[in-house]
Image 1 (cartoon, rainbow over the protein chains, first blue to last red):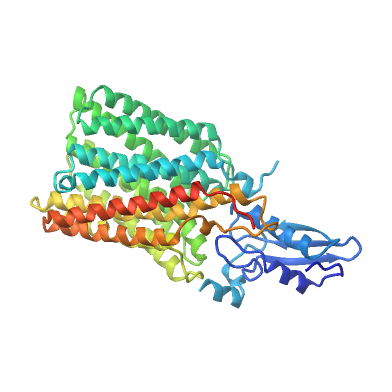
Image 2: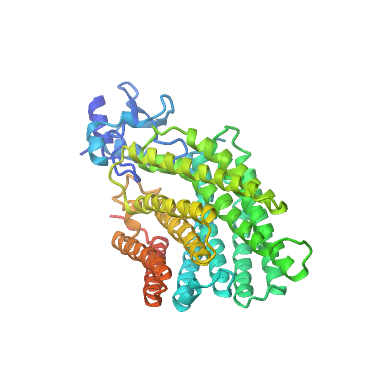
Amino acid sequence: MTNTTLPTDTQVLNSLKSVIDPELMVNIVDLGLVYNINIDEQTKHILVEMTLTSTGCPLGDVIKQHATEVLLAQYSGFTNDIILVWNPAWNPSFISEEGKQQLE
Amino acid sequence: MNLTSTQKAPSPNLVTPHFVLGGFSLVVVAFILMLYPSAVQQHYFNPVLLASTHLLVLGFITLICFGALYQLLPVILDVKLYSEKIGITTLFTLVVGVFFLVISFWNLNLKEVFYVAGTLISIAILLFTTNVFLTIKQDSNPSIEKLFVIAATVWLFITVILGFLFGLNLSFNFFDISHLELLKLHAHIGIFGWFIQLIIGIGSKLFPMFLLSYEASKKPLNIAFYTLNVGLLLGFLSLFSTSKSSIKIAVFLVLIAIGSFLYFIFETYTKRVKKSIDYGMKKAVLAVVILLIPFLIIISLFYFQSTEFSVTQSFLYGFALLIGFITMLVMGLTYKTLPFIIWLKLYKDYVGKHKIPMPKDLYSESTQKLQLLLFIGSLITIPIGILFSFKLIIRVGTIMLFAATIFYFLNILKIILHKRYLS
């Protein structure tokens, strides 16, 4: 459902749970790939800083694009940027308990 | 301009023909073995085994390694492949060369057709080596994976040149070296210098990546790199020496390398976060376990050599290495590479906009499961048939092997012929 009101970080995070890593089949939030969310009320812009499990991952653009499309569809009137960051380098300890269960 | 990781991936037009032609070659190899099962009980220097072995190692394994490497080099090094045109030229030259090589071995006529084959294959490998080196040159960061790929490519080149010279020497006899020793060296440099070295290099990146396991120490990989390459170099130099001690040291060093790699994979597997693994990874892990067999055979073959069993032992050793380990691993990793490149081509512009299938939906899992069971069946029955000289068992094993390769090839075709489906 499209939301036109100012979303919270938690809402954005929940929306990003529909973005699945096509290899691991676990969502990017539970994988611990989403590092930071910044929502600007003035410019109606959502900035997501995220990483990938591996620097050369050929699926990187696809995962970014999926996240962009999900946020555009969920938050009408909001633009967004998904930025890949490599610091701190991702490691499996970032995976949530739910994520670990899905990998078992 | 900085390219993104997806933009660095090669075109499917370069990668997919390697898998199709490679898969087809494997079917032909299995078909030949099914038609001539008695060949596996004879000395390896016979037309059927020479033709089918070269079709297997060049037409299937090397071809798929090339295709996979074009796709994986950008993942490992985070750079774009230097030239796709060189890649296509390499493919064409290699395929024609292998075709002529198989014909010349089949007729056991190492004259004109063999010269053409040897020349074409040498050109193809030179082109491949150039392409890999110019790709690697773009990345200045040192890594053990990169060292393995560089060394593997160099040994591939040496293997091909050595094989070509060996064939020419049968006609012209320009150097006085035991042909059987040269053949052994050619085979071992190819298997350990090219295939296993490449597998260690690529595997050291892919196994942790697919299993989500990053706690294993990389020290065993460093040990494996130096012991493997010093061992191979020593083995190569022993060809020009009458002393047997250098070859013993060479074998010992290669054993340390294999042991180190096995330890790295064991640590990676036991410390993995991804507990449930798909059939592609199951095959890859099982292949590594099978590597223990030739590892133990090397010891028995070398230190307790018995002339009575040497032909059988030699075949079982080669079978465990080429079919049990390398072919199984290549089959498994096919499912971790090919579906992704096709999926990216068909769906990257539709992600998030439509409900789309995932890469694993591009092939049939039940076909893959059946293929694995038949393949394991052949891995058990063929060696048993050979050990007990039971022809019927060998025949059943080769039929299972053929059926397994058919299912593998059908899945490759299913992936490649997948039509975009949006809902």
